[in-house]
Picture 1 (cartoon, rainbow, N blue to C red):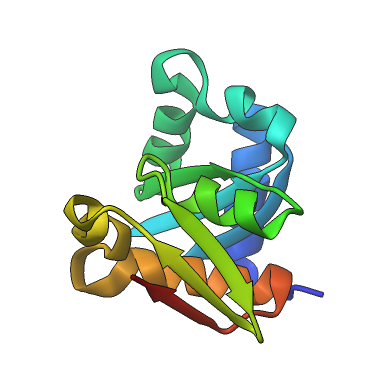
Picture 2 (picture 1 turned 45 degrees about the vertical axis):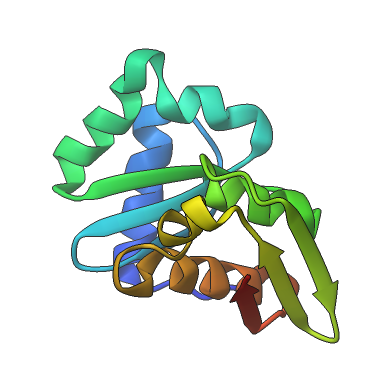
Length: 135
């Protein structure tokens, strides 16, 4: 069971009210909000030419990242790393190893490791996997 603070609850309510999409999870930090939506609601969440995301962004004053939720671990991780396309995703003994093209490694990890930390947090929350390695 995921427990949300008041910031997350407020963000989820605003996001769902503006977009009509159902939120599966939400992580917030000072400069951005990462939101997982039901797979069938991704189009609603983004809107024509990003119109819905832009409305939410203006209302919250933060960058908004929206990803499609999946109950399948491999698809879940692929969705979170989009537009980078991992070559291979392998889970073993509570660790996920993600093989990417060397030219995509920086984008996969993100500035100061921010992207991979976000993926680790969401993967832990939904699949109880704590360790992710990018290779």
